[in-house]
Length: 266
Image 1: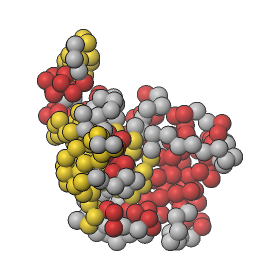
Image 2: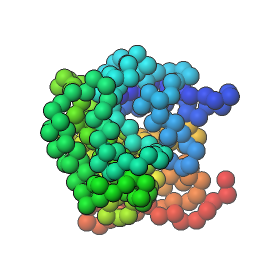
Image 3: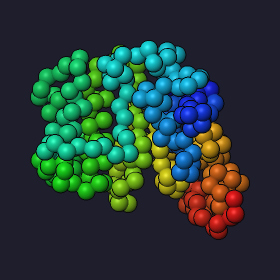
Image 4: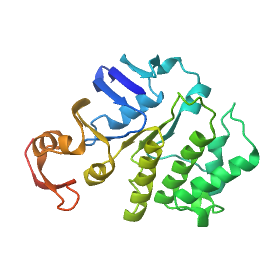
């Protein structure tokens, strides 16, 4: 289990996140939501090990994340950032295969190739697998990196009692409606397969549909956490986003959906 305990990160005396306590358990899709500047990406970077806490701790299965070597972390967790610069003339398939090139990973080439094809197919890019990455749209590039992360976790050798972790920073930001569903269905499938999955989403309606648990951040603090029904409430969202919000319920599934109502003076 990936855990933040009173995690705080400061730059020049300013706390970007402060006293954060959250858990990302295996088998769950946890979604971070909140306004711009709330600390979502900073928290994800702490959870991934890219940043180190100023105070508090990040732990993986009770062990300080900072004590893991780069190789150990690569076997346990994969990260898809908001954007990744890549100027080399790599094809889609070559970028996805980077997920299998971590030192210490070992598997038969045929097996790796087969898994890479599966990951590319899942994100809907088989028709583009030999297209240059630099020629893709933003949404297509994002799906390539999701496939790369999936391959990394699929190929890494881990004991059964060491579940993998997938961290996604705004994975649907550049995607159309169809591929938003593809990516989040796969995130949920990864969780159902026993992995711990955390994603940052700005679309509260997507979060309501796909998340097992929501964590609402505001000004670097946890404003609320729980099921979508527990977190997507008028009072909590209006305070966090600084505008009047009305949460509604779809008749069929009883899933909350959210529309901004009016801008409120801060």
